[in-house]
Length: 234
Image 1 (tube, rainbow, N blue to C red):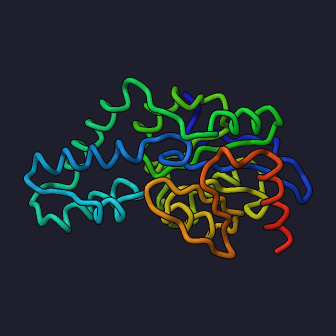
Image 2 (image 1 turned 180 degrees about the vertical axis):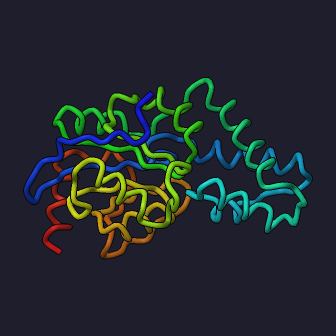
């Protein structure tokens, strides 16, 4: 598997696109529905029913925050570690047979890779989930993968994207973050990166700090380069 925090070089100098930092769940792979199905099944076993309203709160949340939310809204007297273990175990089982990539993801990853632009996978999911999903995405596309349990403060804090940019020898303002959730978008914006939002389960409103598209099928390398140039100009 790709090393979690391997220091690499190769980011292009100057004021153009130096790196692309991809979120995983809901952005490159269609796993958000698996996460909610897993959380729903686990909570049902504990006699609590999750609704669409809960899904909005859980989208893009790191495991620690998701577990805290689930225990808060349910009032269940379950140790957080036990609930986390149940969710992760069921999720890995669901991922065992592979997972579908989001439309346009495979082509875009190949195009960026072929151009020699460094890429990182930056996710709030834990390492065991990343390792289960990477075979479906293609670990060879990434110079770096960073999981949520490998950094002290994960999304919505800027730390994951700042860490990835630094380890790729790139300036944050010359990186494009590709995200699907409000939590991840907040992290990318706080890091000072250009942010491309591709909503999955929750609508993302437009804002001066982000560009919103319906699908990665609308995006190519030239589009990403334009976003980086526009970020530098700001």
